[in-house]
Image 1: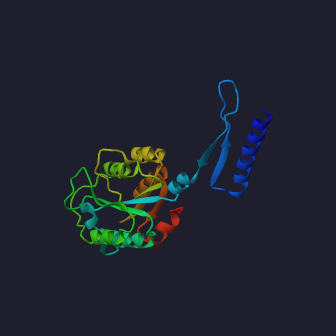
Image 2: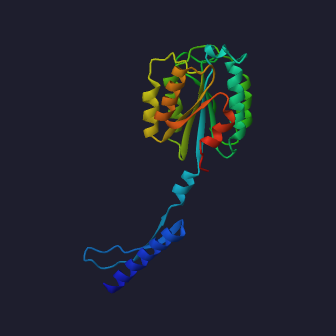
Image 3: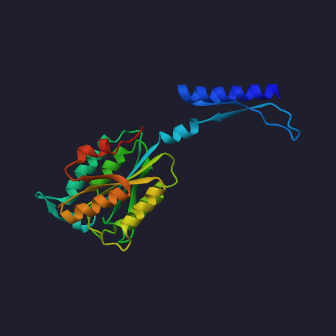
Length: 236
């Protein structure tokens, strides 16, 4: 009995030392017993390294509104070109070891109800993403809710941090409430951030700010592209 108590004390001391000094992996002596209560000593290892590896993974999927309303002008430049400039800057600022993906809706080749995953989430794909951006031409409608939901499906089963970055002028032609979608995704650990491109009215700004708040993310205007990635506080 005394040996069992001493071994248990040793295990507790090791746990305390790990808390003080930040030891990642502990070799903890476990004292399983037989049905009669006798110690049958066995050593097991409890490691936090896998959880820490998952914590170091960051996934960002850009969801880009390329609907026909993006042909409209803002400051004498059409919104699609503004959004391309913004996304290029965002991609430039994203560290290369972050998983990056690009989903586009409303562009030529996509349906009115679904977007296209132009660039699947992976590392070191900045060049492919930038090439894809150059090919986008606005064409169709802009159902925001369903496309945020599709991005959520791309992210939900991945380990690590998960972020959706919606780039839109705020026009929504869909039947699904985006507020409900981003709230549900937040509960699953997926944050939704928004960059508003185009004329910033009081109503549209309030709507998109509320959407980002419900999604646990940040809101940006089209002239704040330099602040997007630093403000997202990516923990890598």
